[in-house]
Length: 194
Image (cartoon, rainbow, N blue to C red; front, side, top):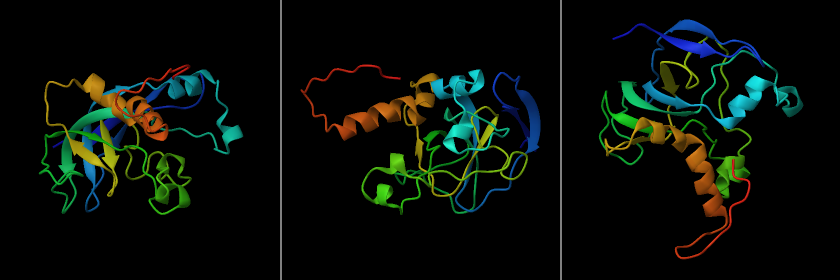
C-alpha cells in the first residue's frame, strides 16, 4: 500500500495550483479512504478560480484548500468496523463507490424537516496540511469521515465520468424535483439550470 498521495492545492483566484504530497491518514473506526477515479470541475470552482466569487462576502476567510466535490472512486482502505455500504451491502477494498461529500449534521431544524441541503453545520472544515489531509477531490485520495453515506456501484458499465456528478449536478436536480413534488407523467419547464 502507498504511504503518501498527491493533491492539487488551490491558493486563490487566478493562482496556479500547487501539487503537494501528504501522508495517507490513519483511519478512524467507520471511515473510508477512497482512491479517486474521477473528479469533475464544478461551475462554482471555476467562479472561485476566476475570482468571480469573493468568499469574504460569504463570511469565509480565504485560505488554501483542496477543492473538488464531484468525484467517484474505489475503496482503498476501510476503518475498523466498516464492513458495509449505507444500504447494508458488503464493502471491501477495491469496490467502486459513490459517496457523500457534503455531510449535514442531522440534528438542526433543516435536517429534521427534510431540508438538509440548508444545514448550516453541513461540513467539517480541516486545516490544509493537517490530518486527514485529503479533504477534496483534486487529489489521489479522499478521506470519508465516519457517518457519511457511501454506496457500492453494482453496475460496472456506468463510467466514472457519470458517477462523479452524483455529488453535485445530479443531486441538485434530484433535490429540485423533490421540492416541487414532481410525479410521473407531469410536465415541467426548466429555465436557467446550472
